Image 1 (cartoon, rainbow, N blue to C red):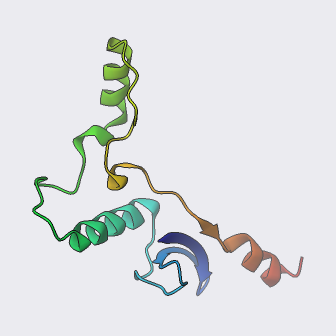
Image 2: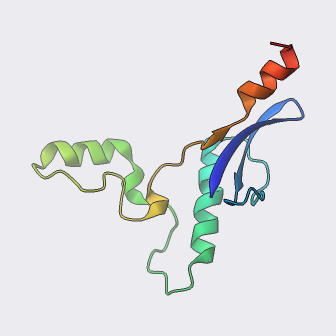
Length: 106
């Protein structure tokens, strides 16, 4: 899956696409909304027995993770957590700049 940042109807939106390019999510207004949608989608696809009670990971509290890292001599293998959904999302494809250049004629 890829997170796309696009300009639609004069506003910047984010949406998730499949690797084939098919749009999977609705238009989302912020990165945090995109992350919430992605986590819910990934959890809904899991067929096994889920042990987590919440899709939110308590380890995403950056301040708490910093304190733990400073108090420990061990360096964690994965600083965000073990699951893919624990890693912060980022924009994979940004279409906004090209569209703005086209609109302004540059």
